[in-house]
Length: 216
Ligand code: B1M
Image (cartoon, rainbow, N blue to C red; front, side, top):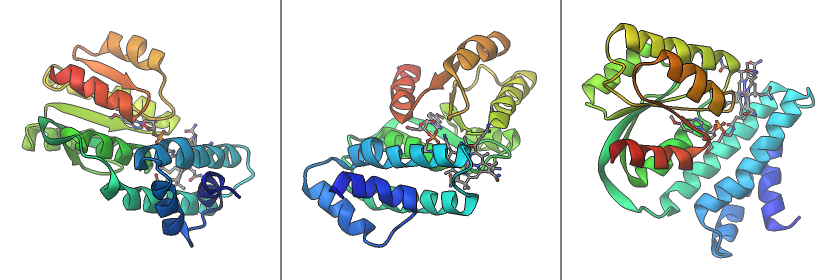
């Protein structure tokens, strides 16, 4: 297989033997690490999602694919260009309660960190209490919530409701992202019930441009 196809295949097959060598070869061929992730590896994760969704792939294999994806991202991260050294603002980032998916959240972390933001990444399955505590403690400028399950879109709504109830809706602009969300759900439904600022980020890059806007 050609190199790019082989890399994509490694994600789909959850095959990490030789992964580093292929990543090195892709970088040596001039592909920027971020493009390797976005254009090649995420294509593989997309196929994994389709195979899993249609019952052609079982969960343990999805987990293996996710592990290879994470290994690849960790390997590429130090090779990424750092555009900025921090100081543009601080965001608390979490995957919401009940949700373990963190590959997307961690990509958002990398993109923001490499572009001048300080990211307090508090991990997966985080209840709103923990998110607000971290935002308070770290004097965050914004809160980012990620979640991939349909259930998580409901949790996000509850979280915004809780922020409103506690009177902190206007304290932190909220960024939401994850595969189960839609722009319409966030910009129509959630905005209608939330007295503060809430934004939808389709991907990590939109997350970055939203942070730039929020901090401007
Ligand atoms: Co799960 N899973 N999974 N899974 N998994 C999905 C989400 C699913 C769509 C698969 C499917 O059925 N086709 C489905 C959800 C269905 C639904 O809710 N309707 C699903 C399911 C059902 C489950 C379990 C319930 C399975 C089970 O146990 N029976 C279980 C849930 C456990 C739980 O959370 N409580 C489960 C478990 C797992 C694994 C552990 C095996 C693994 C996760 C490993 C990990 O993350 N550490 C896993 C995986 C890998 C997936 C798929 C295949 C891939 C997800 C991924 O990493 N994509 C996924 C299929 C899919 O998404 N279509 C699926 C790559 C990643 C970069 O994309 O996270 O969307 P994503 O991030 C994007 C954007 O969304 C955005 O930026 C990123 C790109 O730049 N973004 C943000 C995300 N967060 C953001 C935050 C922002 C801004 C942008 O600002 C704050």
